[in-house]
Image (cartoon, rainbow, N blue to C red; front, side):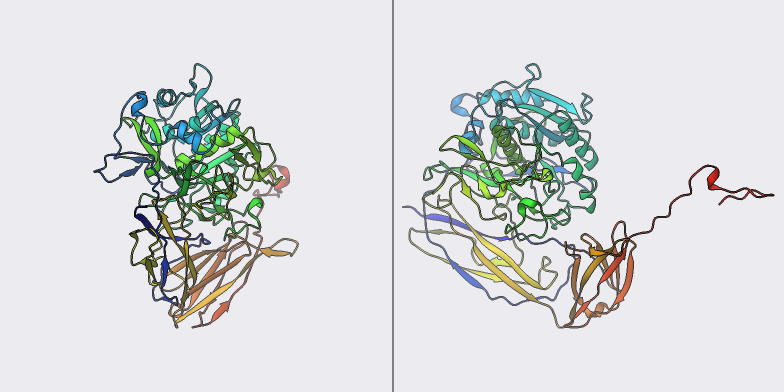
Length: 613
């Protein structure tokens, strides 16, 4: 047996999102710990090939979105040599092709017959149909053209007044079309091109996809304005934008991105990403692990505004609200997929990002058949029997197509040397998300082990980082990846942060009072805390609760509480050092002044000058 190379990375568990400001002076009450790792071997193959003298290079297809906009999540390898046209069998394109993906996920080669999948993207890809023809010819898939009725391209109104072309989004479109073709080769495809990347245009395009009669929609885009959790969400998503994704009987799939919307919507299947490798030591012939490297990783966490769906109740998601994501497929650009793109590209390329995994899952849904309207339908594939079966579901129309999707990995193995099943039951929602944790550091992040050898890695924690703004308990995991087919369990790390002696806590509950005098907790109310030095904005949780620690030297504090449809209220609060001040609020329904009706009944005429009231 040869040496084994292992990489160790700190990954945060999902945590409830809150808007907060940066404080310093916090103290960690956690001691450093160490881990021991057993040496293993048997390296696995990667998908994408490149010049071995060149470091892998990855770039985003689309620019970062601004508020009110979305961006595509596709990532393109720039170190892979491009070629044009159908390639000879001895020089097949780099990246996992259609045949490999069907084998990896045990998808039927004739899947999708009689079904139609919609791809929703922004702007126009003028060579979409021509590029799709090359991809399908390369992998022996049936032709899908406008002429034979398989392919259709429309604008967001259902016509042919296509938007302006965009080379970045064109790469996304090519990726989406190629992946649904790989996962469901016999399905028809409708490409809906939005006029722009605005919420309004994208939402209208999703509605147009439904109007086209499709039963499966892939959305490989999202918000995620900054790396701050929850920054891509807005209270209006539940009132203005969720309606575009709430279509009972239609499976709507969205890329998780980095904790983005619409992946956070309770009405979609949120898709995270993995690294996919061939692995002869498993009965499946493939292995997958969390995609997490210097080129990115899928988002995972808790929505700020979206309610927890019925199918997540009673599940250990560590979230009071909707947890992201639900299911995963290949997304790591280092084990990326083959894509053919000529508008903005030079032919064959290797792509990754959760933009790849979303259309794969949409295609898998289409291969499983038409979703049942009014039910929460999900499917699992048994490669031994070659059959699809329904997963546990909730008969609630608004939660369709989410039936325990995060708990089963298609074609899965337990991650051990001896797989025990072909459909793996997963324990929760945090397998495919994570990012480096600024408060945790390791004295060694990569090393080689001889068979049977061990190594210890010291783990240090530090509370005085920008990420830590409040006292409390913070958890993370030290994730360990190897170049072997064997899995190494993550090591949990906990840091308890104590408040400084000059700090105190303000907390309380916000209730809403109805016209009949009854009260109930107000979820999503805004609590603004203003001091002479700073301002802090909090959002109440499902129980109407809020809490904030801050330095007593900020006194006095002005607390303003507001919620749409209710009259706001304001009060003054004093922080007590080392103490807790509880201030509850009850907001009354806002009184709406009604205009007087028009016509004779609206006024009275008296002698002399006319008076109206």
